[in-house]
Image (tube, rainbow, N blue to C red):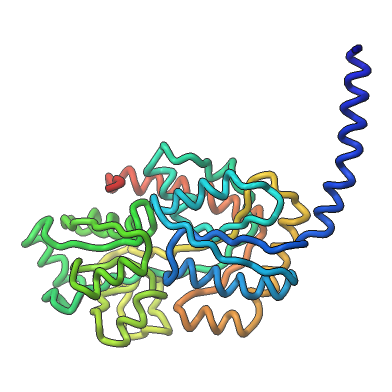
Length: 325
C-alpha cells in the first residue's frame, strides 16, 4: 500500500467520523451528567456542587448527579476525572487546593493540574475560620499563641485533609506565629468539625460554611476569620489581621473543570450557563447564607489563576516547610 493511499484512507476515515463528533457536541447533553466532588457531603465544596448542580440541571434539561469521591487530600477525585472520557458527561468541582496545593506537596499525584483538565469557570470563594473547642482556655489569637508556645506540640488542629487549603492555613499560622501545633487530617470538613465538636482536637482551620452554624449555636469559639474584611454572616469575629497577624488573608476558591480535550463548544455552553446561574438573586442569596461568595470567570482566566496560585503556593510551601502528614 502506497503512502499516498494510506493517507487517503486516513482522511476518509476522519471525514466520516468528524460529522458524528460534531453532531454529538451539538446535541450535548443528551443524558445525565456526573459532577464529581472530592469531599464527603457536608462541606463547602459539596454545598457549592449541589446548588450549581441543581441549577445546571434546570438549565441543561438533564439530570446532574453529584458523586462524592473523598480521599488522599482530593487526589482520588482528581485522578478519576483526569482519566474520564472528555465528552462533557463527567465534570468536577475543583477546589484551589486540588489544583494548586496538593501537586506542590505531593509530586507523585497521578494528575497534572495544567495538562489533564479543561478549565471552565470559577464558582465561588470562602474564607477560613480559626475555631477552638470550648474547653481550650483561650478567647482570642493572642491567648492561643501564648498557650501554644507554653505547650509546644500539645495543641491539635483538624483539617479537611492533607494538602488542602485548611491544612495550609494551619501550617501558615504555625510558621507566622512560631508555634508548634499537631495536625490531624480528616477526609473532609464534616468529619473534621465533628472531631472538634467531640473534643478529639482542640482547634480547626476550616471554612465559614461549615463552622458558622456551630459558632452561632455556641458549640465552638471563633477566634478569627481569614478574610480581608469582617464577614456579614459573623460580624463579631475579627479578621486574623485585626487579631494580630499581619497579611494573614486566605480565601479559598472553587472551580468547575472537565477532562482535558473536552470539546470547546461544550466548555463554552457550560461557561455561559454558569454565568447566568451565578447572577441570579436566588443563588447569590443561598450562597451568602452559607458564607460563600459567587464567582464567574472565562476558561482562560481560570487557567491563568491556576498557574498563578500554583506558583504562589509553591513558595509558601517552601517557606513554611509544610509536608503531607
